[in-house]
Figure: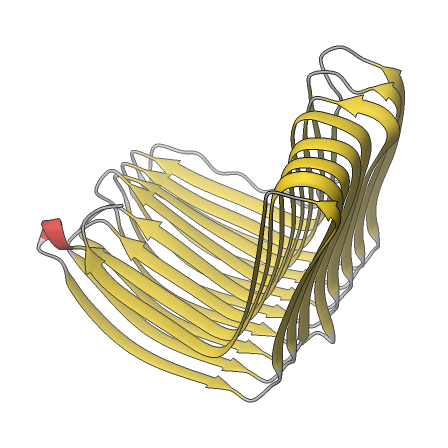
Length: 393
């Protein structure tokens, strides 16, 4: 369900003034009961309180956007499979408070965008195939308080983006199957505030971003259980504030401020009686920034403050199998930046990180009979920063 969608695609100057306020509950639910199919099962459930999309092509555009959500957003998908799910199945559940996307192709876009979410956002996805066969399975459950995207193609952008999430954001995924003959990827992802920037074909961007996640809880939980699985991945990722910027062009200039007071928790629980390769990962971060430019210059002014507890818990249990990897990673603040050395790049970074909360990671693996290789990794870091000038990746 999408409330209040605005779209602009013009060939001339295109000013857009967008104001959206949602006060009502937004919910989207569906249930699929399947006996046997040959090709696969597809289910997509989407609950958005406010959404806006603005794009310009061969033109310049300006956007002023204000989105406020005060109504709970809830998405739920339940898929029951009795005998056979077929070759490839995909089950996706998404719940979002405020969503915005600005883009330009062969043009320029300038923007001022404000997003405020003060109501609970929850996503629940379940695939129940206890006695059934599954070929390939993708089960993703995603919940975000605020999310914003900027996409550029041979274009330039200048934007001020402000996000405030004040309510709990949670995702919970469940995936079970009797037999997985291909690969099963079950993921739960939760973010209080999220910003993605993608620039290609000699683009440039200069952004100022402010993100504040003051909810009580930001949590992602993923559970999976298989009787016999060839390849499986069970992943839970929770982030208070996330900024991801990737550009290819002359300039990527970002001033970023992130503040998290929420408890952030990622919990992944994987189980398989018989398994070929099983991966279980839990990731939790108070604040995360990644800024990469394959081009001439990166300028980053990064400030991160985390006062909320951060916890990542990953568990795997199997009877007989080959290879298992169980990873738990928790960080209060994390930042990384990359610039291309072959482009005669220059990187200018100012970084300030402050973590005053407990950060914990726990990884456990139990093999009750036999296995070929068992790997466990547990990492907890208060503040982490990495800055690299190197060859294109």
